[in-house]
Image (cartoon, rainbow, N blue to C red; front, side):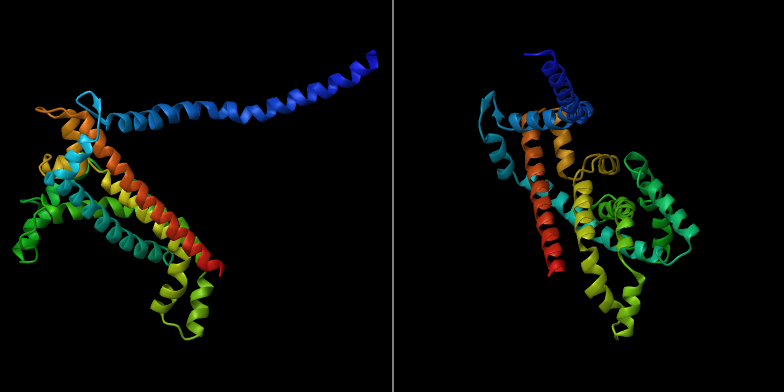
Length: 296
């Protein structure tokens, strides 16, 4: 082979090497994230899944049968789902009205409300429970005031309805932050055009606005349900673990004073993950259906 041939071949090989390195650069930048994702997402999930099938040092389904045969565990799932679904629906409805109103006010007021919402979305856990005890507890300021005028009745902050109020409170700021950008998809001219054609305001929202917002609404609803079903600190601090929800049951099985059953807690966690996965699949199906309806 002549020297001229080698000279012609070397630039080609060097360019190929350079192109391969340029393709590897994104993968190298992604490597730390992949390690982080594996250590804090995949590895714990795999551990939970494997240990959920271990019963008395053997692989078995006894943990799952114990859960489904226990009325106490079924009540925990029922309470968690009830609180999560209703707080998500009510919180989403209130947030939708709030975000719709924010589009009509002055920009300074809007920015202030969004900033306050961003701050209140981080107000959760033990401080939130303490605030509710002071305000709506048995001897809370608002509780005593409303009872004085006969407006409250037998409201119990530490029961089902009190917890629902607590859940709704921390659902609203998150829903507002998630829905606020989605409302930019609405054009004010659409409502004016609908009014010119004789449509009422409710008709515009039912036929135009809600179909446009449906993907964002469905997605926000799923995030709210996941946010509520995983809540633990606020409920535990408010009820001292005496209200039966699934996160309290998991915590009691891995950090209780009497019985530690991490494998049973892992099985409960797997069922919880399966429920959330099912809800997410249904959400994606509804979103795909709404997009298909728009294309038609």
